[in-house]
Length: 300
Image 1 (cartoon, helix red, strand yellow):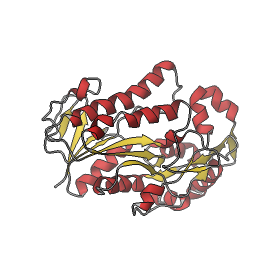
Image 2 (cartoon, helix red, strand yellow):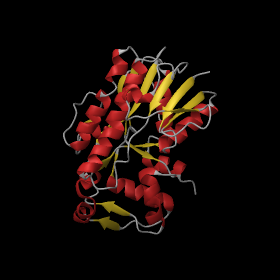
Image 3 (cartoon, rainbow, N blue to C red):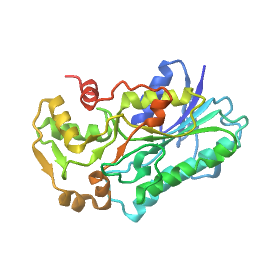
Image 4 (cartoon, one colour):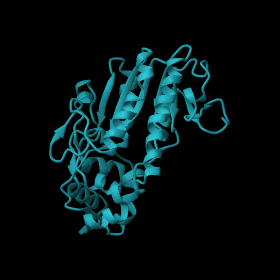
């Protein structure tokens, strides 16, 4: 029986992943920042060196999946908020990597959440894992986030950075926030609607994480995105059709920038990212098409 330690286990991805692992017979240990209440919880403090974990705290763990990170949107990126976004990812990853490096014995693999923000804005240009990092706050954040796992790599632990696109789930995330206005017939494309959205269904997100967890050859960066990115206009149209509601409105770019400031540049930007390494490793998608994905996630 595999023993897997998971951080941010109560989040959108964490809750789905822990349920999937448990259903498969794995023992799941949740990293929590409060006092543990059961034997299936392990207390830690990512602000402390080594996460406040003793060398024997991870004894018996086969794998660690690190999902922590404060939400990127929709709050304004004030200097204080940027500091939170960085520390919640870079600081927590560095602390956990140091803990794994000194664990006795260390787990075999560390899977670290990452993001396709690594590539910056790509416009119409398709990119895969061979592309260099982009520029801007998010690209620099993701670059440093992935580098923070270096202590685990140096200790000989297999490290995978999975760069997720927009994870589509009816229960939360971007799709969950869009459902109420779309169901009221207030769906709208953003700006020109020509910016690309690199997405993945929550079903395939969990399947891909499990795939990378089990494949001992997998190491380094993997894009977790469906193989066919869509434009914002295409996504808006597909969601409206799935719900059987109109979506004839447009949210002007200027209004979005006025409301959200710098973070609006990410919503208006274009990211066309392909999962070439994942597919080359043998992973097949359940939902490769946006219409099929939305139909499965939002059954009538």
